[in-house]
Length: 493
Image (cartoon, rainbow, N blue to C red; front, side, top):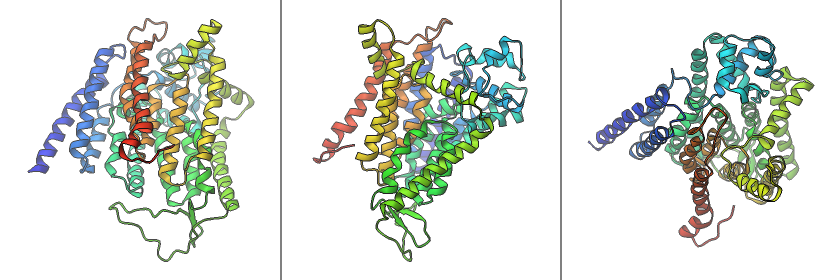
């Protein structure tokens, strides 16, 4: 009777969510912020209740998660224009063009229509996107090309194919995420704080951002690394980088995993495993009986493995980028990536404070200088936590990744909502909840579209301040206050 009541509650909540998701997918303009915020808040509350009611029934939560995604199958994304550029790049590739060498604006300005529905795609992506070279790495380009193979003359058809790719990646994240949680002695249902999260469903499945594919490869790589299959972990990590470049931030953090004594053992087969014994899904410990192992490996052996690990990642990306290589490509790609540090600004926190200081003392926007300083600060911070913080266990390593990425976003000039997906995905394997809170309050950044008048975004800095006040408040509580409330020992990063 209790089980039936629980399932009944979950079904009722799910049906309500489906109605809200349908409204979100098919009857919402991003400029209608009041409706957007109301729907999003309701969905977030229902998502929280669903996990609380059904966290013991992983199968039910799985069906619900992908049932919600199915609602978006036939929907044209209404919160982002980026998918038009995805389709453009994929069709360019199939027509024999190198998408890294041409901007849509440059081609249309001379009357060239290189792909089907070129004018419609150009107008859909917007002038800002169309005037810059593409920055999407080669594996993302392959996904865009797959959409073009199946539907070369239908925007909706291409959207459906891209959406199915992202949903398939979510299946992979769910599969390997549950396995990694089990090996870390954590409940499997924690993965649904990512998979079932309205933020993930809307931004990835709904708006077609390929962070979901990158996160799939990242989680898969971490799972393989935990098992000691570090060569294959490097290959899969390389694929993650070739979807989105953001995992490059994490490379220095593998130092202690490979180098430190006690972080790995060497089995009689020559494979490398963590010194802690992984657990089976039911919580029992997997036995290592019959395997000869050492408690530590020499530092030079760890250095060799680390070097090979980095080399494999580099080779994977060199092979994937090779078909596009030219000096013009290198120049265009570097120029485009630099825009995120020197030109673009959206939903920032510490950068906006630094910008106001620049206005006060210099009288103009110092984004070019601030962006370079932020990049240096991020590098220094990552190096510090790579060498000074304990990153020997998988949970410590993932926590270090989460802190590195959080620091990057705290100092970045541009933080689009979908960027937070990676931070949320990593947090599932840690004890920290501030990324989950951020995945809710990030919706406030869409207020920039509320009074849009065709000339660009008009951010309300008071709203941005509220967003970050909540995020920083939870962050500071979890780091500085929560440890003291549970123990008298001092906590440190």
